[in-house]
Length: 249
Length: 249
DNA sequence: CACTTGCCTTAACTTGTGTTATGTTGACTC
DNA sequence: GAGTCAACATAACACAAGTTAAGGCAAGTG
Image 1 (cartoon, rainbow over the protein chains, first blue to last red):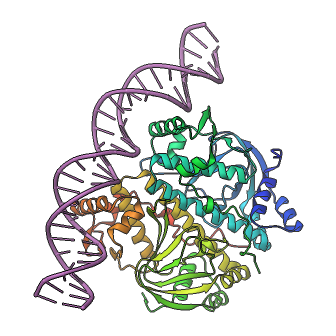
Image 2: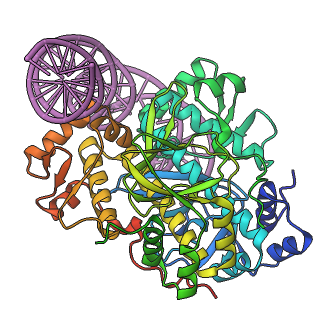
Image 3: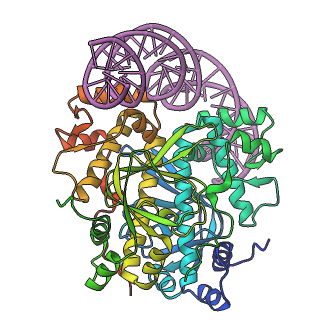
């Protein structure tokens, strides 16, 4: 685990989880114009209604996407970990339909959208990798609809924790069973469509049943298998296996 | 409204809602190899776990995407109307993470996935249109997470009806205020994450308040404005305005 | 025409989650 | 080291939505 990687290196690593890239493509990704900045927790990277001009890439720290109902009730619709691109979802759209906000302080590389568009236009394999990762995000949104629509509080929370752990591990950011979930219970509630009070009850119940151990915001699964069962978690929708049959040409 | 259009013509119309295409690109879309078939209601077009090889395009009729929890509870994660492509979401993925099923009988053109991939590789503007439509679908998924996670039954149902009406109108399939929603209350329940009984209660309450008029499965909004308010509906997330700033090059 | 079937409707009762409110803890500040 | 603040914790109560069950109705079918 090399936490010293630059955001673009993190992005490249992510893309190479999807497709093998020739050296020339790898260099082209790393050569993308960008400026890297450290941003504080709760900084907005994109606001609903904005015209997207840059695409942020998370090097360190965490972020989330959120939407609001007409009377200001929040729903978090995605959580992002280092290596995630934060504005691919707006890559070809004229106006942001949701906001992106930092969950923690972190390092973000901002790539002009135009350069990213040009890169994927010029390089079919990079394009395939980027498009695949966009589609995987779509798959995660669908799973969230299912999670919020059809699972009870306990299952829903466990599912979210499993997803987070899986993704961290796939990106090489988890050393096994434990991980830090740097999120308040209120934010957690907004991610699973519950109230903070009920999230608290439910976390305590998971803990009482020995399914998780908490120490501040550090969470450990004593048994992955049991968590997987309780959370009705099947990682298929994360498409973590390398994409093969989709090869271009 | 020309209902006699072929599925590919419907698809082309959809793409041209997003970007203007030169004649050459239009011909290329229409020349995509395909076979068109009439399929019965509840036919599966894709099953979770399938390896995607074709991409269906709806010419007539309606379809939906669904996922199941581990104990078989269903959540419908998308509704599709004529002109929608039904497997763009799997265009670069190796395995289907959800199922696609016909809601009604309808005409579907099946395009080999490979040919579609080649088309968008070869033609930047077609690519931009297809990618935009994939991103718009992603935006709709996010709105569904918000809808199911944070809105009460009444608002949630009204929102779904507004979305459906808007999309039908954008595709030129609605003659104004009324439309047919060819869906059972049970399916509606699975789309909004409620029980059929509660959907029934809620529809009746909307009807009692004069917000909708029902006649079999035909629904009329006496006042769009009031429905929009009750459903907390802002069509921004549908990105119905033509995409301009995203022009390639 | 009786029979089935799928869908809609309604009612009585239950429950998971929301609401409101108060208290506790630990970190930070002046 | 008293004061402030954000986050977590807990309890009592309320209610929106779930559950179960039964009846109605229209469209098919033999």
